[in-house]
Image (tube, rainbow, N blue to C red; front, top):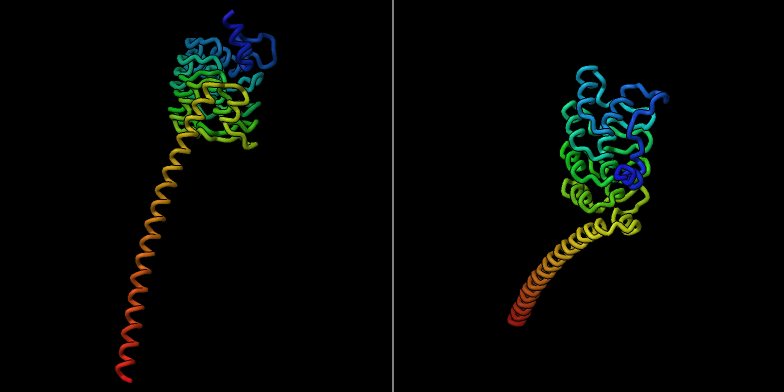
Length: 234
């Protein structure tokens, strides 16, 4: 029942075992992704270490590799195992050109997102639909992890839609509140900067006014002296 609920919530997570008899069912990518999806760390170690499978091999039926599958299920032990075997954290899916971070964010796995970000994955890269991971998450914890690890809270999609607007439209309340807080913080910071600039402009104006008055006073004094000397000469 739990597995069924997870699949309904995250449509991307549909396969839990090898589809025997299907085309490409026995390729390296198919076997590795199946083991990763099922959380079978021992099988992954056997395939990569003993049988020499390529850890980044893609399952041609889904367009995903073992890391992508582990990010969908949120299995940190499989992710760590793949890291130990030197998997490429920057690989994309074949269909949607989604990164592992896109998949982990979409499925609400904040710990996996943190692990990926610490390995250097880019937080604001767009997928084929023009969306960043922040556009795809419904979880405030995921949003917080991405932002605190260098993600831009004001990132926009290829169509110019912000992550905040996306959260509002999809009724992701936690994400909306967190992004709103960041937006208000940015506005307060900009207001403080503007106040400083205004004070600097005012100070500059007062200095220029004082300088102008001194110059005018000197000019007036010079003219008075010239008039007096002219009078005396006459």
